[in-house]
Amino acid sequence: MPVLVRVEGGPFAGLDRRTMRGRAEKMLLFLRRPDAELSIAFVTDTRIHELNRDYRGKNKPTDVLAFAMNEGAHGGINAGLLGDVIISVDTANRQALAARKTVLEEMTMLLAHGLLHLLGWDHETAAKDRAMRAETDRLVAAAKNRIAANVKLMPQKPRKNSP
Image 1 (cartoon, rainbow, N blue to C red):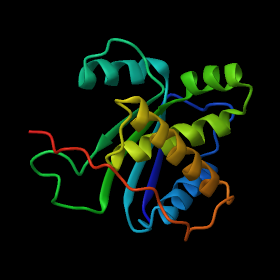
Image 2 (cartoon, rainbow, N blue to C red):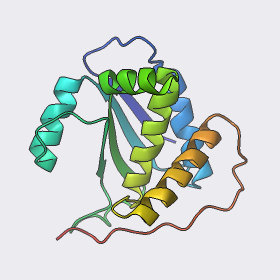
Image 3 (cartoon, rainbow, N blue to C red):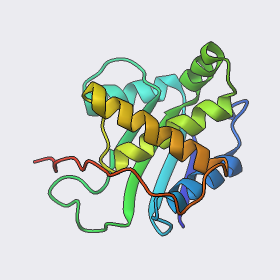
């Protein structure tokens, strides 16, 4: 299960690369994708702002970005290569403080959210948002060993491939 974890701009208090890699691997097992390749980058607000501006046209930082490798004209080349999840540790820290939870809990939730985006989930409507939040919670529970890997998954709503 190749999960690559990269830290850019750190070290960051509250970030444990080994724990996050382990949680990502548990999420992939839960999703029945144990051999999938996933890249996770933990970055600053400055870096995620640049990426959000350059790739999404949004000139502001965000908490998580997901760049799927299974979309577009060449998306079917390697189904095992999921893509990249980029998490702003600065934003995760602020959100964790506001929600009165640990940074590790917030980063785990952001990882689950980003991973679902890689698999085609989205939250463009209220119903899709509720479904995605529920599945995010299930992935977080799986990452914390609170749910068995054989639990039936909620159906995925695949995104249309980009032109």
